[in-house]
Image (tube, rainbow, N blue to C red):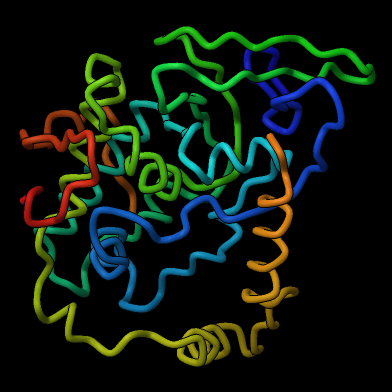
Length: 272
């Protein structure tokens, strides 16, 4: 990995008894609006969003996982990616329901750059485990110079996870605040009743569609969602510590929004 990027798996909150590396979901569904709104603005069918998707998974040590799941640390995509996410959401608002852009096609699965941002004013103590040694290096985070990482988690999941706590006054002057606010505001706008009234797409529908396309049925996941949820949270609790225009063009098509900012979690009616 490029030397300017940290290995997130090498981070720990302590210099002794480093926790094992585990994989867990980043976004668990807690947001300012319902999952149905996200499906609409992400260009998905109702019921199609899979929170257990590999695109919503991250691998870190258990103590770092606890910090991320409790919103003490957040992952913020680059401004270029945030602008593309906003463009897709606003474009889907204008399109016919069945002509919406799929955000996972606009931003294909792959490795993306993120800033590792402490949510609170006083960041948690972090240490970087040096390769092939038993030594540790203290990681000081001084805004706005945040550590950068490369991950395969998809940016839309990182945005909706981090926005829940990042949109606070203490971050108002930071570069990412305005764009994160505008993306969140776009997601909380009312969606067509026709989409809300649609029958949710089931797993059987997905299997049937993929079988028709490929001639083969898809395999079941290697894990049970319920079993994995129990496993993930048990180890977390056990710790003690369609093409999209280029960005230059996108910036010209984004309308002004009234961004969300709140010390508390605003209700949707407060956002609109």
